[in-house]
Length: 280
Image (cartoon, rainbow, N blue to C red; front, top):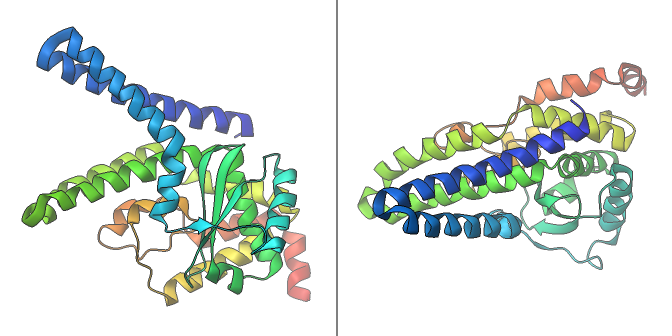
């Protein structure tokens, strides 16, 4: 699928979501008190949509517990991201740091000129330069395709639904049993696993080789099996791979295809380069 078509598809998804929310609120207002309340509810829906659009990235970064990473703290990383962003055709995104040891990365934002890539301390320590570039290029591909906009909105709304269950007090477990599948269905409705294959393919073009990202995916997958990760399962779509154990509530939010299939597709893009790597 062409890059332009991917962008249009993702923008239409967000617009369709906002229109559906406004329509539902308008219908509720009409049922309760006719045209006047319906208009007020629709206006509130528009305000809610604008707030989610402008501030979803900040809320998502709070969800993954990331802080700003100034250029003086990691000049090499900033330089690498700037170079890769120029190749990808996007403005250099802001950088944030997740201060934990599990190698992981994610992206949030609105698109080409207003996005953030968050990396963990473990990622910077675990990956060699070629693999790190592959992961960064993958996140830049999500920015290029506007996947970050849909992912940020989906993750934020799903997280709100999950956290709402805590308002139930002693009834919270039963409430989570209802709201969890609803949030999961919402995420799967907006996000397709194919977006990861498309981002992998674009990342290989940005880096000039698919093998750095392929090796990084294997390393990240192995790390996720060794280190238990705790966090909101609603954030699963944001990461390069799924860092959660696929069980319980987290099992409902799996939107990433199997790592081995992603690696197989990446390797097939440059089989001769793979043979050279094996010979070395």
